[in-house]
Amino acid sequence: MNIETITEQALKLAPASRAYIAEILLESLDYEEDFIVSEEWQQEIQKRCKDIDADPSLLIDGEQFIAELKQRYL
Image 1 (cartoon, helix red, strand yellow):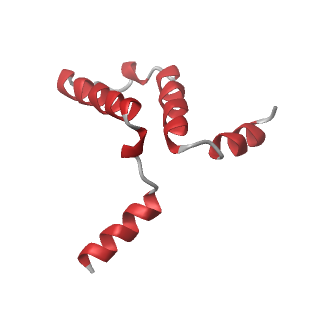
Image 2: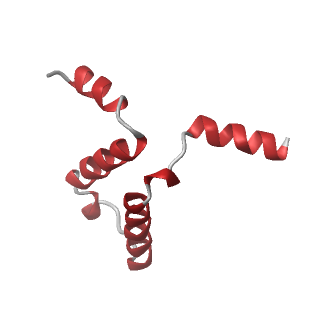
Image 3: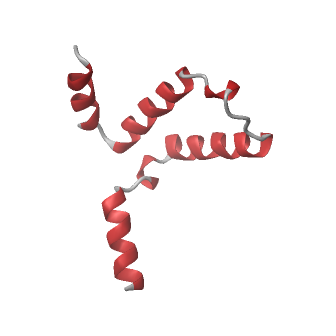
């Protein structure tokens, strides 16, 4: 498989699945050495990841979110 095929297939997945893959890929880059993250932020990140894993319905499409904001505030 080439990168285009992998990307195309990944984009067909549900948002929660894409988020999971993104999380794994980012962790594999080992950014912790390059970016210092406070303990508080590390805990918040872990909490949010657990919340999403527990209830993927918390995720909504970005375009849907913007549309809802426009409807509410414009």
